[in-house]
Image (cartoon, rainbow, N blue to C red):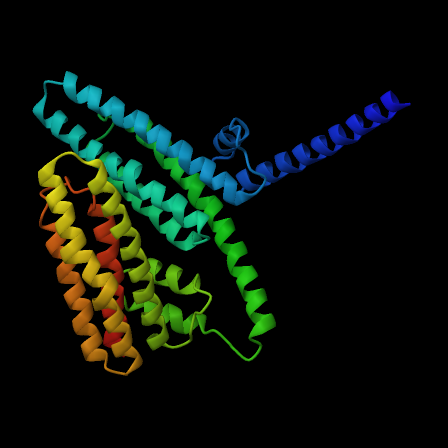
Length: 337
């Protein structure tokens, strides 16, 4: 009797497992069909032992796979550089290596971090940033002369898949937010048109729109919007400051340590602790000119950090670049006010 009960329980558990697997397979199939490269998407996700039953897990798998692919391509480029004798080709390959390094070390890991925090808009921005770097590499070669054409092509396909899945997540996240807001804030109406009009007056429309739309406290006036952008910049600067601190502990090059310490002490700490907070306080008091002064001051601090490095040698180039874009958006909205 006990053996029969055990067999029955085993069959029930097996049935539940099969049903779960079928559901997961269906969801993977449905999700990948919404991407431009169904077969590639499906093969990667199905072959991953950590396959998740939700699009959020799927896009993390895709991005991690992309990082591994980019790392392999970077190794391939570095091997090619050692072998070639043509200086022009060597220069082009070096440029491409410098395009892949930020994607591997900073941009794509930052996208995964944003996904884990539920900030799908910013993750999508990071994916777009990585795509631009690969396209820039492609443009160094004419016709079919590039030894990286197929590798760059696959890289762009992987990024396109990630971007397509992120659109699904962003749409779902926006829908959920609107449902919750309609239940708790029945009297509040958000003006998408005003957000759109405001962000179009900034130099980075997509980044501006994604940040403001993804914020649960999204207001319907430019004053509230610029506060959201500056607070986002503070969070971004805090994350970068932590990243610099971790880097300083790892590097053994004293010159690099000094440069990183300068960026932490002279650029990011003042921004996080004083400058940007003073900007927000000034906005809340209605003193927009003073707020703009603080934003300009912050931009100079980031520029000073950038100037410590030459060429593409900075491990902070992409982070500083995003920081400057956030400050430029803030300055543009302040002009409206």
